[in-house]
Length: 265
Image (cartoon, rainbow, N blue to C red):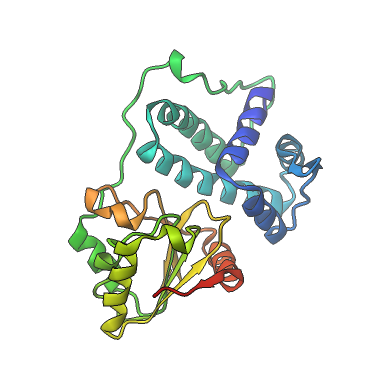
């Protein structure tokens, strides 16, 4: 494994995972995470893992990590501005290469392979990203209609449009957001009131440290790159999390339990 590829993998972990998420993942796989001051030492972590891939949990951890990183990278490609999009487009093929090497068991030595580092956006031309089909509003409604358990939505920006998406949900709905109550807006408050007056059960909770957006129901979990309130723009592309499903759901449930209940109205 070359110095460039080690740096790239460490950079990718830093880019796509918060410190909290990385600590949770390391704990789940019993991986020791070292620190520089109060921040994770990403390069040390990568060297430690790649230095002993025969330890089963190291390879499993890296494969799971890379698969999740690729999901997040793909979502960033679809929602980022031009300059940031170029960065993620460069990162994606390198992450794919590392994942293939890990799953095949063929990690290259420093002499046999050199993986180029990600170049500044100004030095490359934009390439067309591979896009998953977007869901239109009717498809989004049908997507949620399948829920036969509590629907938990983690969204950093709640808006009135979210209730249009949930109009056919019969289960309880949990909304977890990082927005303070005073920032939700009258339109959202009125839409929530109309929704609950129909006998629907909705609870809103606050956790300011939220960064990503998730949807959970039927013991399945999806990562989304945009808020449901903007889903009418036909760019809503939920990506199901498979390998880390149980871990992500457990983390979301714990965050919900620790969150502050918001009383609206």
